[in-house]
Length: 534
Ligand SMILES: *[C@@H]1O[C@H](CO)[C@@H](O)[C@H](O)[C@H]1NC(C)=O
Ligand SMILES: *[C@@H]1O[C@H](CO)[C@@H](O)[C@H](O)[C@H]1NC(C)=O
Ligand SMILES: *[C@@H]1O[C@H](CO)[C@@H](O)[C@H](O)[C@H]1NC(C)=O
Image (tube, rainbow, N blue to C red):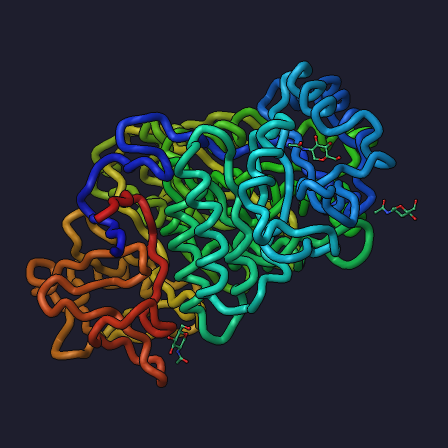
């Protein structure tokens, strides 16, 4: 069964939770994991220190309330009775002691294992020990389980599906026991054929609460972390359609103290993850965290958009070689606009009201638009006639985030429609021809996905895309004839022909018979629309 995003629907349908009940994980998790900072040097002391530091710095009280163990906590062999055994050199007081210590300090404990024969670090994996491990982890006091995907019997999607389904069964029998973080998608990212990646994201969304979907973030202290973070960011923007209440796309840790980052880069990392409503799991030495790190990680305005009940993942409004712009809605009706300077020097960018998803017509009638800069906390009244929001003097690799107060105008999801393999943008041209081209930030690539299913670029606001016997054209008549719907499969489907938007080999935009999550037919688009299970 495919899930559909109905362009007209209102209200998000709960994720892994039963209908009507509160999902187990309504908001993205915040906290600490040892991996990117300490790797296999995991110890009891790291977690005791982390707990104390989170309390002392005030980070626990702004929401960082989870302490998650990663790989290498166990001995190299199971006990005679089949249970895993914690390494008493690393955890002298034992894991049950550690979880009760964590709970006494106001934290929720999490643990790691691997679905295969061995973990990525070579420790015992859970394959064929699912029930005993599930029972032990619960008995030891854990409430969050990260399930890695190294060393499965073979690398094919069917085997991953079968093995992870064993966990799905245990979760279904005891749905309140454990938040389940699924790393299976990460083993299928970045391939030439993304069908399996999409398939796994689809089943991860049905059985668990989080999907670690791409590469591990750069570990301490080697390498360059900006490209690593941007790589995961770039995978993440392809997957917005999967995120829903109770289920989060996870682009990995905030590796705050990686020495290769500038402060602006770290702040971008945080601001982007907040805009995505992504997990905020710090992987850093908290005993040495600096004042400026604590300060930005405690930014309440940014945490509020991360922990917003709608949990929308911001989607791309525009992209060129220097700038990415993203937007999303939050629960009270405000609009968030995030502006990332990817370039090598500081610069300024104005994002028009229209690109932000607001109606210029409505704004023309209005007065001022109330805009808050979430980094400075300053609220300003911007003249509606000024054309838009300007991010001034954004440093190289810096990110500005603005919150536009509600009720100035209705919102139309507006932004890029792009193929999530080729990353080419659907492009309108003056003649009404539509094709996939390199993203360039132009009006011809900025699409309004209207609530009634009609879709137009802001280059040709009175023309909407149609399926003209297999060719995609933008035409005036299209704004009444051709409605489109978007599915969690990533297909954009024409309501008349039931064909899917397709990127032909030469870049032409066509409409062809819908296949199963095909490279040429999976697209991302501005979500503001809501996800319905069908
Ligand atoms: C892990 O511990 C070893 C031995 O003490 C040390 O050499 C290494 O630097 C540590 N690695 C990290 C990432 O802390
Ligand atoms: C299994 O063996 C380990 C190690 O001897 C022991 O600590 C544990 O309590 C045993 N588990 C059960 C369920 O008996
Ligand atoms: C892509 O992968 C899917 C799933 O494994 C497979 O069914 C399909 O044939 C592949 N497509 C191509 C073009 O190889």
